[in-house]
Length: 135
Image (spheres, rainbow, N blue to C red):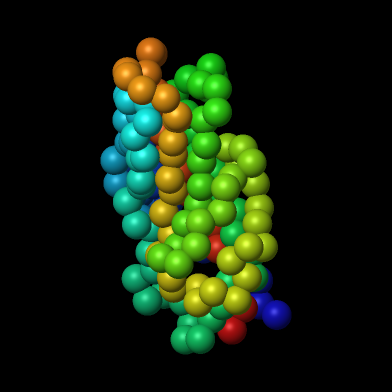
């Protein structure tokens, strides 16, 4: 089995890592200012850099929030077009996407239940998905 880490990243500063030919995707911050709203990240997807017929063996995720005071019942999920898994924290590893084509796009979902403005508002400063795959 070949184990190769490829980074799908969104960096808050817009800074793009210059790591050889490793695919890196960048975008903007996610501002979380309202309760009861589902916030979805940009699609993090391959640009054809995976070998043909590669499949996911595991996925590692990480995101950073602007505040250490996380609202009660804050939830985060990692999704593909056909499934979402609830994340148990700001970083971790999952086998839930094992066997999925490695070039399948991923995205994050953030949610704070309730109504009204979130005080103080939060920003997802950075989020990234690292895909371990084999072909």
